[in-house]
Length: 208
Picture (cartoon, rainbow, N blue to C red):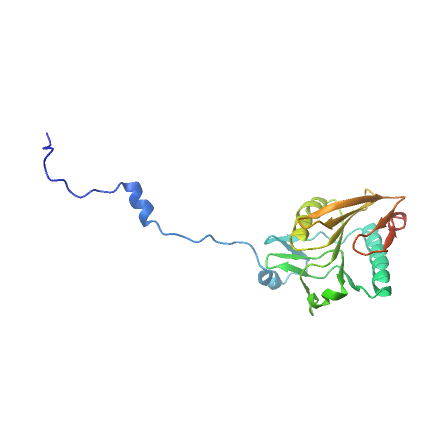
């Protein structure tokens, strides 16, 4: 039997405590790709970088997709140039929103006051207006992921063009996110909150 008055030795820490105290502390590793990584890709294919995730863009769009895109781009360009409001561009052109987000919108507009974001080979910052034309393989990405990203980085207005549904959804930034203003089906005329006075007949966009 142990003598209760016997001299006690030093307290021995529990093994778990020892492990906790001696385990090395590792900083979290960010495995997301950056714009620098994106620029190193030598493939002839087109990519976007969304939240650091490299996304290969779909093959060449359908003929109807091209027709719809061309009609919207033409109408926007004419209005913007006639009123000296800025510049309009269409894909492919890199828009660098951050080190982890590089997109190629179908169509975009940059106001005259913000032309400084236009660089020699890319655009550095959020366009004022972005237009994305849906395809079956990109619909969810455009409507959810890219919409959230565009809102986060300050795109002021976002058009989601649905060739299958023959409609255009207009969303405007409300200070927190890109919120839907109105969905314009065939038989209506789109009005842009950003481009005061600009109108676009939906029937003309989707004519066969």
